[in-house]
Amino acid sequence: MDSLSLFDLTGRRALITGSSRGIGFALAKGLAGAGAEVILNGRDEARLTAAAEALKAEGAPENVAIHLLGFDATDHAAVKAAVDRFEQDIGAIDILINNAGMQHRTPLEDFDPADFARLMETNVTTVFNVGQAVARHMIARGRGRIVNICSVQSALARPGIAPYTASKGAVANLTKGMATDWAKHGLQVNGLAPGYFETELNAALVADPAFSAWLAKRTPAGRWGKVEELVGAAIFLAGESASFVNGHILYVDGGITASL
Image (cartoon, rainbow, N blue to C red; front, side, top):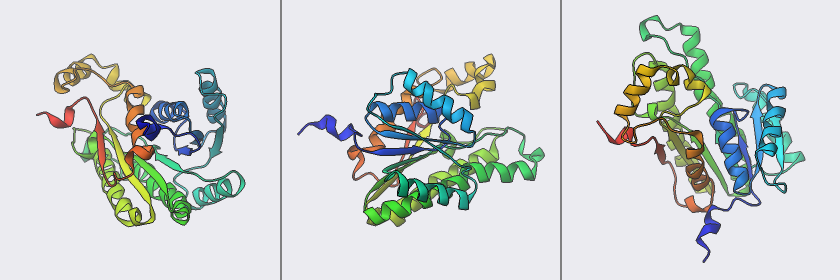
């Protein structure tokens, strides 16, 4: 048996939400490198087009198709319509990576209720909206892979981000619930939980010497993660390699959740 074939995504089609930049873009690039057609998603059509061009420029295989599917993942009806239309006009979505998300840093006692609601809608409701829309088609086919992007904050908290921590805890438990409901239909649903990575979302922290010094001491690996270091875990969870892995949260965090 060729064990490397377990990580070959040739012939699969993967939708990655929030994939015009950051972790989503890195995962789209990585899955394309493993042979999957990729479906870039976001709300900004111009940014999606630029991301597709960047994928091609950065070496996406010429035989791998890149699709654009613009929709607002917080809009349940729009998500369902876009996914249904894509499935009908283009073909099956075999892999879903729920990556869309946001951060908002404010002490909890000062946190605005509107900001709390927006953060929950962006980080949690989108996982439900897109997960349900795609899973309905996967269930009909009896197969599919869903990877929800969780966080080290699915298990840990820090000052100033209590609502974000709550949202990522919810995503981790929603992942387990999806697996519990959908594994019997042939779906594998798991979470990928990054630690502290150099992304636009963390730009202010990366630029803060005091925080970076704290992080280096707190993380056994002694550094920030690079988004490319998430690709291997994503390919594992998206491929045949994870055929009996369900409801698992895979932390890619340099050891931060393992250490006091």
